[in-house]
Length: 94
Image (tube, rainbow, N blue to C red; front, side, top):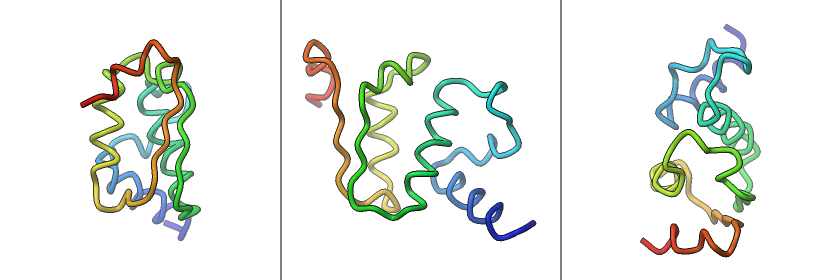
């Protein structure tokens, strides 16, 4: 296994989704695609993550709780900004 594969698997493990490592994009659910995109963003180690209209990407899971669960992990330190439609603002009040 080369270094990039090890690093990708490590990130997926940190996110609690190592089981998707062998999947190809057409075989993934929307939430699994989001996890893959999130892992790619995390690898850059930037202090800010912007998520634009998560409901458009995460229509297969209760996405506010899904995002909160991911953001609560120690490895996910930093600022997460979520931009969503104003009528969805109540979803983030917890």
